[in-house]
Length: 466
Ligand code: FES
Ligand SMILES: [Fe+2]
Image (tube, rainbow, N blue to C red; front, side):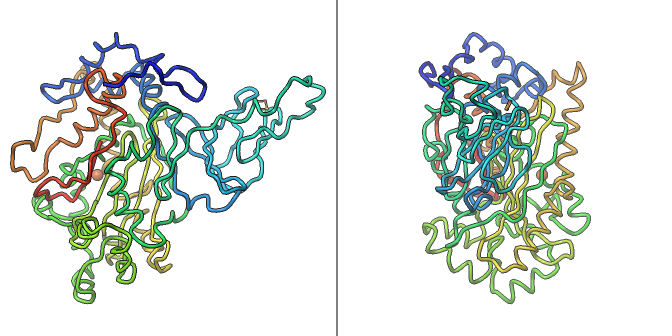
């Protein structure tokens, strides 16, 4: 249980204002703990959606980008926290800010482009001007409009709390929320296995792709929380065209080479190097792993049991897998992405491509192509999933269909299912419920994640947490 009574947001407003526990009945109807199922209404109900914006997206840590996207003073990119527009900036002192992209005069959007370098942002409506640190530095005809009581420092852009984990930038509006390190908990060690395993670490390659599909934001988020089950059927076309494993064989592969085997030069690469390097690494970069990670992390990478996909609640996910490039040669898809809602039935997907900063240029280019080919807006893998999410959302237009359920009744607890179950996706909904009910249903929304835990005997290589 968590007591929210004293929480205050950036405006000094109590965070408890909308966590009325009398609405527990709504959630008792939506989530059936005994049968482990969730009403599809949770993905269609406008009132529930408005609660999510307030109780999840206004409260928790949200992933916004990577420090390599804004390396120099004055660099900025625009992002969103849920539906709130923000500008991610680096000021003259090198400090990172997350500014609410809402003019303090009358609410217009101040910064109108996706990225760039600037000293100031001028609001197009009446011309108020802010520096990249968010301070109000220009007011047209100030002496005519205002008297001496007008104080510019009172009108700086609103700023979210910003914290970084090894280059990954997160922000929250909740000034009382426990620090990011507490939020990530043991999960940080898993993120490091993907994003800080070499001396220089990763960088973002090119601007992220963004697109909107007609689906509730939780449909991709819950899938990324652990749905290895869908791969064999939803992505069967990969097998049909020679890119991926047979549906009947997929779960038998214990390591991440499951997709790599479908590269035409797989045998050649393994014979040449004596092994398959983790996605995105070559022999030289792999040597750096031992000095950047703890022995248990390095061992997981060495044995090919490293993470393949992950999800940090509520909407930060990643895929990290070796795959054939379009010409069939061995490459990799390295991406992280966010699922930000644009209404109850729309989600904006932002998809970044990543590569080791010290990787050769050709390797970065190959990863960029492979990631776009598979997981970009028109990616062959992306289309398979999008079709499912959109079709579910379309079904929810029906008066009968919306009374159906998302079923998570498969559990590995006490079984030998080798990690194939709905447990992780059920974790996603438990955490969702924790935020929506302020802990009243027994899930503490401020709790951090556990340690790296690979379910014993898993055949999925999918490391997930909700
Ligand atoms: S709304 Fe921005 S200057 Fe008026
Ligand atoms: Fe998928």
